[in-house]
Length: 294
Image (tube, rainbow, N blue to C red; front, side, top):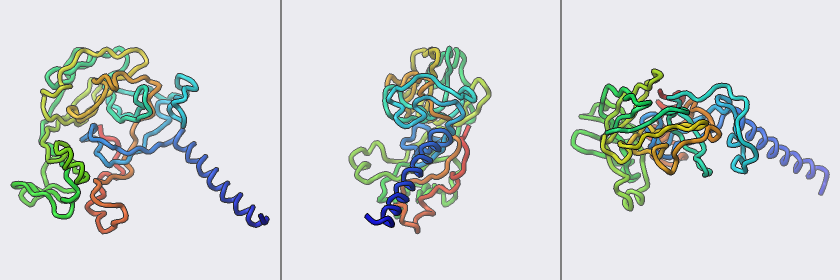
């Protein structure tokens, strides 16, 4: 191999190596991107939102770094602060290599219970006010060009119209594959919910949605959060696998990765990214740059 070819190969290797190293350091210590794959945090986060979390906020554990599941050490270091009730947090699911994003509801020593759809923290009912309509529209992609029409409602792209006027309520729209909608029709459709403002004991106000107050997780046992653990719930209270379930349960403090900072990109799966002419109906421009919703 000539000296010229050796130098070119070395430059190529250095570019790949140092570029990868910088990316690992950036993701491990500063910001890490995630995308939202499910509707468990609607209305705060929508399917198709891409978020950054700040890695320094709660300090670092082995899960903050690549190969964290190798159990090289336990504990955290350089913790700037402790997670606060109301924070939207990304954590590693206990005993699995899967990340979840949920809202922190309980810290060590707190008791949590759901009774008839209402949240109780330390034996006191949490205020839930200002009920208003909310729509979740999960539509097959075949409708992305022709639109969805039902009585006075029409949906196309990112917008819902009522009597040919912008809908006066909040909503989320996602386009799913036609095959999924055919094989699992219960996952597709236009679903009506109620949006509330929930006021947590520390004064944090945030939105939740409820389909009903009689869902399987609307009546639970009393959960007492153990030492060095946290209790998380989704804002979409009737469609969230969270600490109310055995699959997630209490989350070790070491499994926490960081709080959500802001949404840097959002789309509704309307069309391929290369279809530039569809960006107006695909990209949720109003959500880009949006900070975490309280």
